[in-house]
Image 1 (cartoon, rainbow, N blue to C red):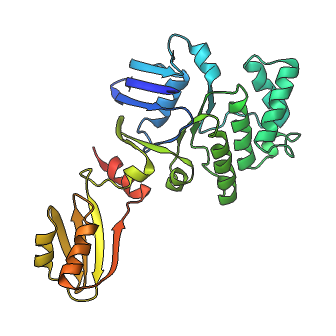
Image 2 (image 1 turned 120 degrees about the vertical axis):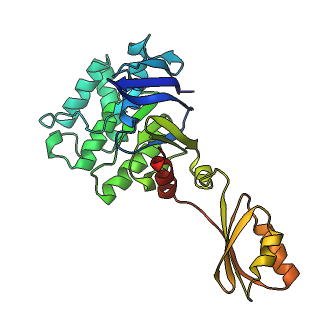
Amino acid sequence: MTIEVRNLRKSYGSQLVLDDINFSIGDGEIVAFLGNNGAGKSTTMKIINGYLSKDSGDVRVCGIDVDKEPKKVHGLIGYLPEHNPIYPEQYVKEYLTFVAGVYGLTGADAKNRVDEMIEKTCLTREYKKRIGQLSKGYRQRVGLAAALIPDPKVLILDEPTTGLDPNQIIEVRNLIKEVGKEKSVMLSTHIMQEVSAICDRVIIINNGKIVADDSETNITNVGDDNSTFLIEAEFMGNVDINDLTKKIINSEIKLIAKNTVVISSDHDCRSEVFKYAVQTENALLTLKKHEKSMEDVFLENTKKK
């Protein structure tokens, strides 16, 4: 595992911000870390980076304890905070060379690494400009290039596409996907489409607790009680709802038209609906399972107290 967080707790005075949270991120995973403002996302990321102390728990990056060997961990992580700490008066290449020096790279090693990151993040036509002259999208690219300078095993990105226009968002997403082929990526975002576009897994934090942790496919198949399926069936003829209820156990069936029902069940009951249609000689016109969206899942999990 590249990131392991166990029993992590953090308070600011009397306010408990992280309440005994646990999660891990594997090699080559791109993981979305979601939550409302104040849920504990940025605090968690800063603790993993070693920028903030924890009250208790265990945090490791590539097996290395963040508290015991912070310098080693610092070299393993590339971090792009929400408010990108770049210097607008500096030239792009000048700034990246400065960052390389911070990570101990000098001379030809620094030059080669900076040139490589300029090419990787598509800054070749912009590197002679001052950072303050760049669009927000290109400034984010500079921040990402800086995060990649030490050739980290892990990238931690806090709201990497905030404030970008649609074209810039697509460009930065594609760049993150490309980087994610070689690195583990943990990113926070409020844009649910971003999760579908680039992430392998979703972790949702609410009021300092992890309330969901799974792939997007699995997480959108789960209902409020962790086992609800919604099935809509449209028949050729009218439906006898009492008869259908007897055929499908552990289900709630609502008639939304004379020939259409919505079934809420603890299992995927489409095969039973099909059998009912055959037995009653009432042809099925449509039979579909309703998928929850990431927005639905996020709202359900972040409304819980």
